Image (cartoon, rainbow, N blue to C red):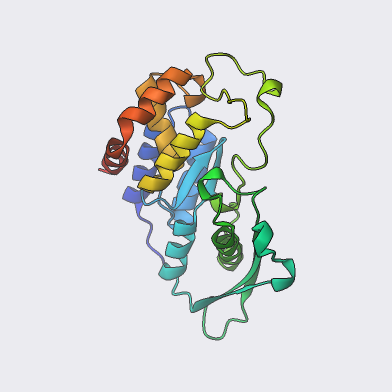
Length: 240
């Protein structure tokens, strides 16, 4: 019988309350169930919380596969659906839970319209990761969507004139419809290889607001300018 790490479950619950103070009781119950049934750890980065829902991560799925002694993963590109010039890619992944397993198949696609600004230009790797994630979720009966399958901040940005943002909003765009502060924050996350959700929580604490979207442009600019290595150090301390 598989043993249940009660300390890990309690630790994930405490960490969730610390990072997301407004997390609901139902969400915490789901977190406990995930930690108990699949041994997914919040501290290890196996899962994350976005828009009041839990999402499994690529790291968590790979750790799950290793714990269950996955026999192998085969990934191939689907040439007829790929267009390198348009940065459009599609992959098929097959997960073999054992040497006699016939395989669990998953498909993943990516193009500039459905990937985050953080990974723009790496659509091929995103498509491969999404295919692997879907195959692993099928193989190990993970009902959660993986965070890598989401197209956060995807699609073309609307013109600045049509956004009607408040003057003090941290998301105000320039004349080209771009969001320089958001782009700079994304670049910081990518350069330091940080968890986007945790950085947002840290930024909100720094700006003394309940949510980052409530911070002014000046507050966000100050945070980005003064963060640098301190963000990575802060994230590491969260696990202590």
